[in-house]
Length: 385
Image (cartoon, rainbow, N blue to C red; front, side, top):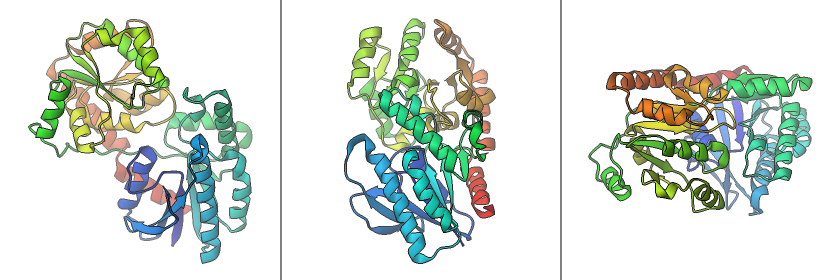
């Protein structure tokens, strides 16, 4: 039996983002009987429970602000060490999601190595590039990434772009890497087009099916909200731009408003968050098109969900997005007028063109990003090491 300890996600059942959803699918759809998963979960206690027939162990973490995630990973790693030692487990891998604990990593890595345990790391995206962090925190993330790349037995990259970056920037460590993508599901939303939940949402926000472009994502500058809003305002589109994000009238929102005056354009609609996944999927399906302006990091789950659901996808032309979208999307750059012109062109696409783009996008997900494929690749990786 191969014991796989997964740390770094907030845990399952998944209530949060990409890593949590990944762990949910990986455990729920496990095929091999030769694998036993152990999943760390951020919690208010240190209890154990079972979910998806896998052992989940809670890790209680004091609320110490932005360093909470770092402490959580350290405490989770300690718990893995103690459990492996106590139960005398001989055949195991610890899989760490994200590079948060670099300065502390070598110590635990040595202890695990002495017990014959391998440590795999998913480097995620370029956390050190995110504008929400100040200079010192960005320096920490970069250092942390470097030290985890240096000491990991294997780096599992969910993007070929990230794998290339690791190999190039950390060549001096001769890092061992492999590529396994993130997953998505292509299936129609269970919610019907006539659902009262959907109709009420449309009415509340003054939106009509297939008469809006959509943005879904974290409300941070590196996702290029200003570019997309400014360019949409410069377009001649009669459609709306619906933005689903955790805005909460923060300072970025106020700066954006000051710079663009988007409140003077009735087409720009900030509608808050949508946590109901069935409703969100239907909103994606019934968008005329989807804008994706992310440029930091690897394979983005919201992009995969858009390609799986939305007929027409307009993506910022960066290596990570092109790697995923390929021929299943159209691309814009940061040149003034580029996206505005693309929107004007897209508004004129006939139904055959839109259906062809939709088919290519979904085929892209089915052939390269299906959860079945991803789970098979992970199980193969775990069992052969």
